[in-house]
Length: 183
Image (cartoon, rainbow, N blue to C red; front, side):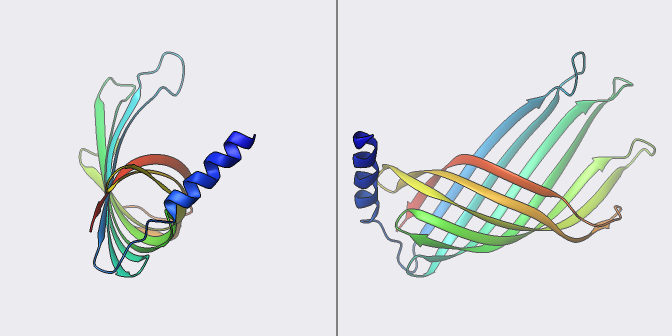
């Protein structure tokens, strides 16, 4: 127990040496792959995604964030047809840093295109989201960090495009990524 406390104290002392000044930038990135089988003999549903964000520091430890997230999902229907749909999320937000800890909030606009099983064309769906999150940047090497964070994202308003109804989606996520500091 004493070793864990000593490690946490060392990390906090080390982290206190880091601060982000106006004009500096952080480039965040992550990629993910998921293969999900809904039941025993089903074909897997495969998802691949890329997320990138750029943070520009307007004031000491306060950043303006621009997010771009892309995902693609493929699955087979019961007719053995393979369907693929993709979505693009564009977001704008802000973050506040205390040493290497951060909290942030942002608004995102998603454009989703997916096959319509009853028609021969794709369905377009648009939605708005609010995301709240936070995490810690672990120094890896000079100006490179591993980001460990969590977020809560929920839908705002109604769907638009070909979709109808209230956007009541909610997602809790945890993850890791790589961050590069551009002084």
